[in-house]
Image 1 (cartoon, rainbow, N blue to C red):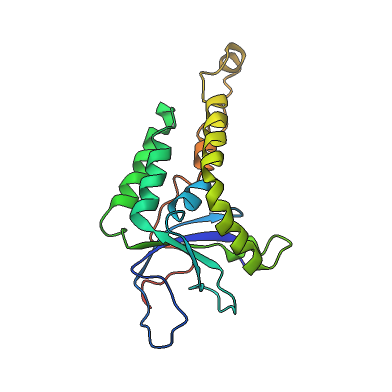
Image 2 (image 1 turned 120 degrees about the vertical axis):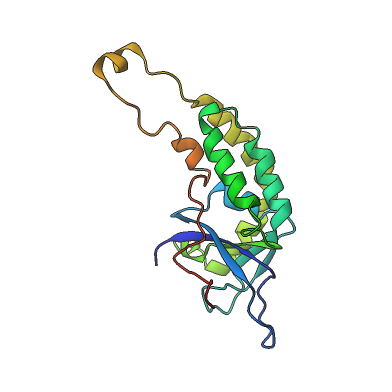
Length: 192
């Protein structure tokens, strides 16, 4: 396993019904070793737990939510980030998610690889992840406070004198799951 969380757009929520044709699925993003806040915001509207498109498991472990409502919720959050330096990452996310070729009825989060890193069974972790979506408002506020504390600033005189360059000043914003949008993911459903 690559220990990633995967984000997809799909025309309908997967089902265990045998007579149902496969949904149309487009990759949106993947993230290693975590489930970033942007992914959870995107899947947080009208969320249901459903069968995985990746793993053949007895339990439902994937989450699906309303695409348009999730994108609105993410955009509302991103609009509150007061970092001019982050504007490009925010605009990139919005352009990608609003592009007609990426839009669908539902956004789907496949997080089983990340959830298996914990001590709980994946199905239990998925239910906890679903329940945790109700607390995102508080997490968004904490995140915004943190971002205001670590906001990039000009290097100090010693750093300038020594020619030191800071590590990626946008790392705290990238950690939200921004900057890595792609239709090509490790698990690709474009030819199914």
